Length: 60
Image (spheres, rainbow, N blue to C red):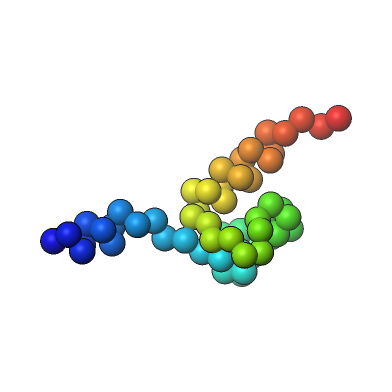
């Protein structure tokens, strides 16, 4: 029982390369490539939040 709960609780993470090659971010590849570190692992929620925060930034 504990193993199943631990597996469900652990978020699924992806490398920058996996995210860049995904269909989900096909229209945002340049932005994803610029925002994420090459050696990091990210959840979908984290990437979406990073994109949202960037898009809310002020233009000077």
